[in-house]
Amino acid sequence: MEYEKQKVDEGIGKRGMPKPLHRMSETERLERRARIRIGSEIIAYAEGFMRKEGFVQMLPVLLSPITDPLWPDPAAGIYKRLEVDIYGTTVRTMHSMIVHKLVGTSLLMDRFFVMSPNIRLEKPERASTGRHLFDRSQMDFEARGASSAEIRSLIERMLHGLVEHIGSSMREEFSTIGAEAPRFKVPFGVYSREELEKRYGKDWEDELPKHISEPAWIIDLPREFYDYEDPETHRWDNFDLYLPKRGELVTGALREFEYKKMLSKMESAGVKKELYSLLLELAKDGKIRHSAGAGIGMERLIAWITGAEHVGDVQAFPKVPGIVYEL
Ligand code: ASP
Ligand code: MG
Image (cartoon, rainbow, N blue to C red; front, top):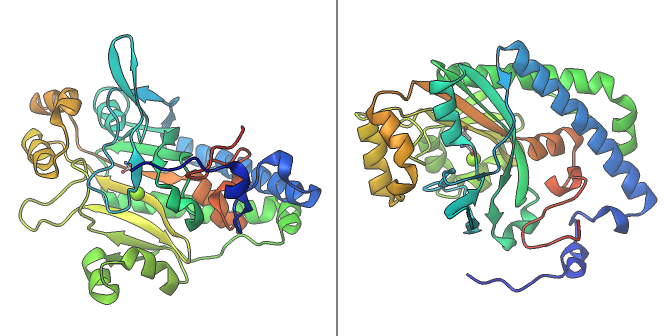
């Protein structure tokens, strides 16, 4: 679909849209500064936590012939995939480092994480959801030999420690924005997607956040070829973490590592298997190891903790779908 160019003035004129720095009032800038200072502390805490858990931090990859197909995933709303030819080869902007994570945990490092910038050109109508950006970062991590339950528990421990730390160390910043860090109990409740579909219908993703008061895990979500599907029950060993009012914060899973399963899932989803030939070859040779991992949306995490209306309000240089800001 083609979209008309949307001027920055029109875009940010709409209620609640994040403004660029040079168009903010002094008060608005003070609030943005406080959110970004809290964000900086959140990033440092999350990185330190992962290191203590034995994860090695690696630097991100931004362009690659292989990236996340983001298909089939009901939460994906991409209007255009960015591809560019370099040195005679087509590369794509990173949607997520999922394939790099599968290969990395198999051939290089048992446990690692990346603060990974992802460019996903979300549909412009997603500007006003408050949850979408076209240029954002996730803490993307993977652990060889781990289970989904282990990854979920690690995230719960991280978030629990994080809000305690931030609540006590960033008092001045919280008072500037007139907010408090969220409180919640761990472990979080677990719901199956099937149960939610029965209760709320097909739009359960939009309905659920209105009905929960604490973060909640959703399990068994049919989606991309790399998440593990039980061949007998057809249940998916994967999960999302949903926040009250805000929706999805985390996506993760136990992974497929068997060649035949990956191949047949790619075929039935209509994903171009030529793009994943390296992964398929490694899997065929038995070189892809069992792993599990997840990605935590950093802007969503910071926006939740600082009570920001829009995820772009925690970016120094907002990247809202459909609006091309000057910086
Ligand atoms: N590939 C997921 C995403 O970026 C994250 C994960 O499953 O680890 O949405
Ligand atoms: Mg997701």
